[in-house]
Image (cartoon, rainbow, N blue to C red; front, side):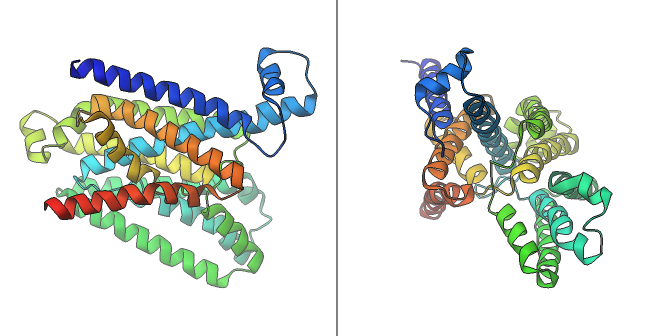
Length: 336
């Protein structure tokens, strides 16, 4: 069997697994609903209004959010690992999630300290809006830095420093805040898929779709960047432009997920490595859709486990992702 057929079979297997897990995730939940009741809602039969709301407005929305998160973080992680040529790079490397976290911290912790807790503006912007403002602010800062810093290592260092600065400000806000505000921020930081309503989903999915389209557009530059920026320049690629587009894509994907669902860790770091092992391929024309499918599968598994044992999603993604990271570190140390 040639490589093309093997790749096609693997894609088909992943697609089938994703579909089965999607159905299983819709069936899973706190309310004891039979498969027949759930199917009746999708088939358009007359069903109880409560059952219909649970299936369509809660379970289905949550599962779609899990699919979006799986695709967004996996593709973001793949792009960051390629651009920085670092196997331990993750979607949060640029400090975008730290910026989103800082925006949310200002909304939850900082607004009451400044007497703005009941301000109509702050109430209208909400946690999602505050998170997005923080993420976009960091993107603009990184974009300015990347225009003047030729070495990608300099951009990496500045991204890490931005994260540290945001973390320091968040700690100051936490120190000055009340127990109730701290609890609210802590719950957000644990990550949650259940806070996204059907209305919010209509805002979330176009942003993720735009980020994924940009990532697809950048597949050729990503393949050339595998061999280094100098090689990409010799092949006629405008490295600064390509880098900026990749950063915008990563910000749209990671910033959206963080703003709507909180920081979901380890998925974007682990899935690209699993994709490389699964497909035995470094071509982003294979890795990009492969990472999307694997991200969907991984996130749906995590969500089913989280709902079954009523656990925060971050703890599940960490337990599944950490073994992969340990293996990557071991492999690099062994063969270095």
